[in-house]
Length: 380
Image (spheres, rainbow, N blue to C red):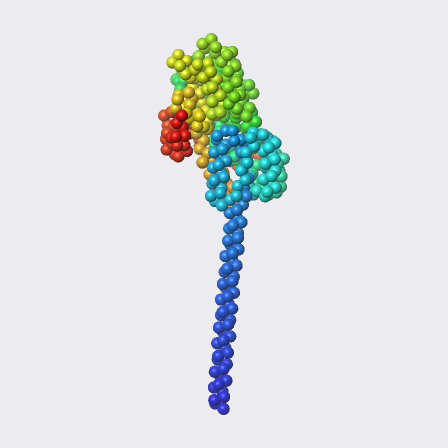
């Protein structure tokens, strides 16, 4: 009887141990399966977040700076795992509208837009907003719509101030020197930045025009007259050709030309070259610019252009990418100005990067040592 009882206990113990082992194995398998599932879900979420489609639209490939802007944004976004739809509209508003429509249809999560006409995007941006897509105005403020969420640019009023102050200091206007003859060029009237550049420059120069230290010989001072549609070099050149013929053919000295950017400056330089400027008895006037395009850096080295305001597109692109990431991740979007950039409907939260002045004296430090250009690129 005792043997039977012992045998029964042994069998019961073996069965119990078997059941415990099976339970542990099942629990371990369940835990491993759960961990594997969680890892797969996490990986899928990361892949999905990293492959978000971002739409980037630039105005044109005809200006060097927009090629650099587009390339910089695309490379920096792709380096972080995003897909990028980069488009250039060749300065055609309808083309840009069509590109934006396509990006909305494709499911872009954020639109980064350097507009051609800042007042023409209201309807398409409403469609974007209705689809839950955020929009960042890149370098050019998008006007007259509540559906632009952020603005990233340089301090464009300050850019104009830099140009005006350069002329002021180079001519010694602040020391009472003068009178000097000056001609004024402005940017494209469909670009809000053009008004800011002009306002910044004229905040410095207008008092000297008013007191006679600066004389606009052509009499052309209002924005509409001095504007350069589409920022075209040939348009700036044609206007300067006419001014020279009408007002400077008799030997009247031209001391300065306010140019808001490098494409207009190149046009002005071409007009001056055509009538023999650059000789000892006919030196180039002070010519301002902006963007540090390669032909203009060469012109600065050669003494044809006095200065250009450098807006490092790498910095601007990096800030735009930072904004995109914050929007995608639902974190706070970096801005440093919430008061000044009113698009006619709302004050657009903005981040403004700092520009710098480049001249013959510092171009190597600013452009070559920083890696923006190589020496070979600006050697004629």
